[in-house]
Length: 390
Image 1 (cartoon, rainbow, N blue to C red):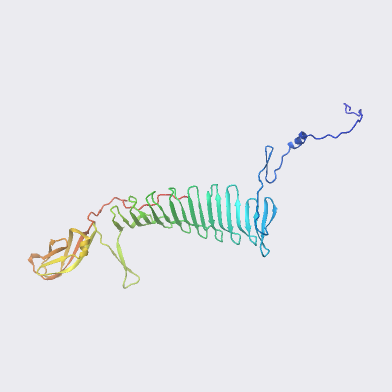
Image 2: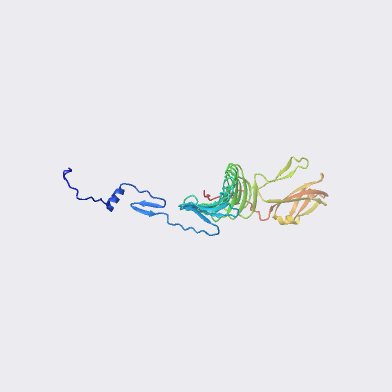
């Protein structure tokens, strides 16, 4: 060896240098390692992230091809065409002889999905289980040939839900849980405008049905009174959702029909393009009447009420109208009012013999305390109290 790196040395032998482990590690320490499929490298630790998966093949004439994680299980048909199951890591599918997937199961970290397809490889039914935010729990979808959803059955974080759709994919009906944990049904037109609703009023107070116009105003109500939830009613409303006519059971248990006018109508007997409408006579009492014609004999007569009128009217609180049917009459008067009859005499001690018309009006039995002035809103029908889930 020449310390001055000159030629002043003598060769005594030749030996090869051998790398030690520390030198080999140092050689690689400056470069990055690349993880293959199913391998994770972190902090110098190499981990197998895809443990071996067991696949069992059952049946005759089955074969498996491919390599992990993509392989195909084939079941040859009697005609020689193949029907087969295929697994590609995240999905398992079954295809028909025309290579259309008829059944497919897809799995990721949060969602498991089962699709049942038609012969054109379009989804007909889809079942999803989800632990994320979109479809917590399970959901079932039904699809027509055009791909739009027809039916959705599932839920959210607070309860179940069913939706029906038309061919354009618009919601036509929903059934769901309300914010008060009560059931509700809503029906929509083709523009997704609510036109009917059935659901609860207040918790523990029953339910009702409401109809709506295409502008959102409430047209009909079938429910109970706000202040008397045990009493039912029905009302029709104007374009401002204000009640204009209806029927209900009031706080006394009486059935009430109300409106601006009470009418009857009939077909015009001489003109098929017209109708005849009469309006009811109204007054501040619940009254009934009866009428007839009786003959005066020697200036005297007694009128006996029909049995049905005696059952309808209350006490002797009735009024009588008399109309003599003779120009020679001196006038008529009611001299005696009994419970089931009244007596008539001609004025000025007359002794006429002629007919007269009579009419009697009486308050109906059990309606003697008819209330004319009532608190506003006392008999208003209830509206939905719960908010539907979205």
